[in-house]
Length: 304
Image 1: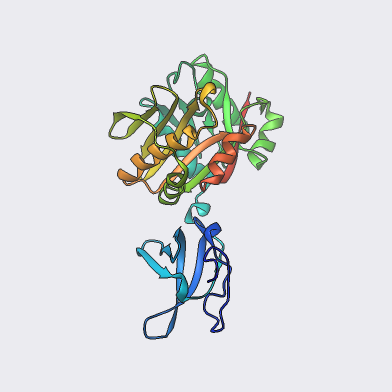
Image 2: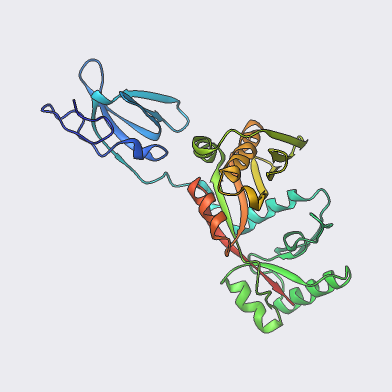
């Protein structure tokens, strides 16, 4: 009997495919035989590969179980194009305001001036900078002057958040705004449902505690070995503050904490997960990419 974990072919051609346990978590197309002998195709994400069957989630239409003996052909296919890729950087970054219970905002043409109280013991640049993802819609010199005036009145540095390498960054340079030299961060997005399926496959069972409000949760694992926060902004879930005790790393705790936050977000109706991860944090980037997060754009902070 052929090994069901490997592609194989019998004399009828049934079972000739490029599938195996390695496609779990991937999007696949599978042609298989129906009881009456006709062949049909199924497209979706392979969620399980067993000794005799594979299970495919048909992307919102429920799972289907296919006998391996009935598989005619099959192969992995590229992920479905995400509508999230068509969202502008500004639309993504506006959701960040939900991280603070009190945010002072003031429109500046097409920019947004923001000031917020300390979070985690310090002022965060995300909440204390002008969001400038497009041209200001007013004169550039006037916009630069107004940014300086707004933050000077609050005795804060005049920070501007831009998309790295953008026309906005280049135009602000001769007006006296330059990179802070640190803090460049990818804005990464993922489907909550798909990311949750992914983390559930590898997250260890760890005692957890959830605390917060209907729109904000903080997850604590194993008495503080790992923590993570989730915040709702409409049907978006903002993930932040994922941290693991250095003495407890490489035990899957980051994945477990992320799983708890994603599960909470899914139960609240969130469909899109969003986070910021600094470009120098290779370990965190690898973790998030492994579970379906994709970089939408990269942020940079300028100071004038």
